Image (cartoon, rainbow, N blue to C red):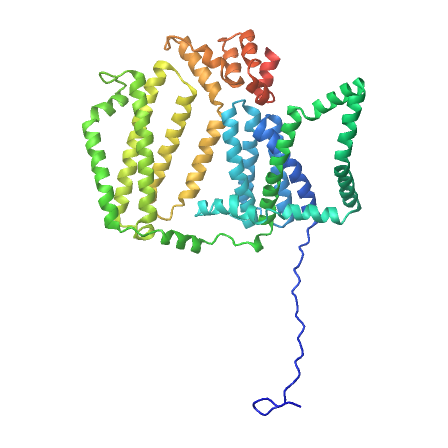
Length: 503
């Protein structure tokens, strides 16, 4: 026996067993497996009928199906359907109808973007059981659009792998696929030999290969390749919000801390930086008072045409609005004393900048009215006017926020934008443009009617122009069917079907 240096008995070393913690494999419910298959099909339809071909009724039906599937799945996961979530779901259904009531491709594309963001927020809100729009809406949108969906981006692939490995059908499908891959080279060699041996076989196989490698097949393959990541993203969105306990929810305290950490500029520096801008605006309005007031008086300044006068207003509006928005964001985010601690001077600067911008917006709108009354409406003039009105509402909210700190700016801005966007979508702008120009021409206020511009618009404008007697059925048909874009994107909606039945 051996003794250690302390005079004790040395014990033999006995290795201890190493315990390996087994990774718990998640179990997926039947509802999630069914949802996985549905999402896979819906993602391909989304790529085909939203990204490539916005087909009116088909696209509306697709969005309604996706929204309904999301609602059913989240309800099965016992998510809270508050009054706010019910209203948000109804808004989603209403905006899904836009694809069927208009043939305007720009409006359809904008609506698709809106539905994407609103849909991600709807699923997020259902998972969180929200009773109203969050105070920190930008942070919530980042979680809804990016963090949550990508946190479970590969979950659908895991479900598909488990389903295939645990079923006899899946095992047989894998064996069949392996067999097909092994026989492709041999089949190709045999096909080449047979084509060289016989003209009939060559013609038959050539026609077969032409169909296989046609543009339609390659387009289908490309759409299928895009549908795969879309499917993983969409399912990840549903799954992550339904299992919200596994993720970090939005914490107002952490959001407040993040905003507080952005405050690093001394208020004195901010005053010094903003004061010259405000002084410059005051001098600008004083020196150009008659120039701006002429827009409200509907008088054209000397040396200007209506086109030049209106265009200068647009440049002034966009440039000043963007600068002022940037300055106001810097004041609110980066001043050391902001938020509840915001001093009166900083509030005053915010109000002054907002008022100056609203004055420019009102002036530009007055110029636009003069321009439209003389030359008529166009798409650019209509959309620009809509944007100016929306921008005016935002700056009004900024002014109110200076006096009512507890006002939920994100909530009111989201509501105003949604209402304004609904007005834009359901007003069918091109129909309004055609109706206004034809009415002004018939009343003698326009020297000529730009029929070529109307004929180049969507079926919304063509149907209105036909009903107003401005174009004939032959003209409408010749322009409609000469446009590949109209044939591809604008056939299955209410205006197009009505026009088809008339012409």
